Image (tube, rainbow, N blue to C red; front, side):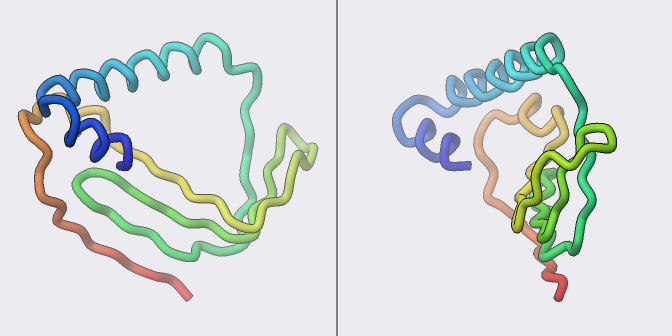
Length: 105
């Protein structure tokens, strides 16, 4: 989101959307070609989750990161952000957010 705001204030919005779209495509291609392994996460608890403009943000606590059956790391907090690729494909401008937030305790 910071990248979006930074670009929107410095370059035209149409160009910013094209840059973000190309970044997503390039990152996906590189990850698909260079990923060496897959990980699994065992989650202690979901701290919060939010759905805003086709973007999910999930904060997880007490997460064990596993590669196969081997514990790679134990992390106190992980924030996952996911989006649908169609979010930026049809936009001409940045919309005002309409968000719904839920916290789990």
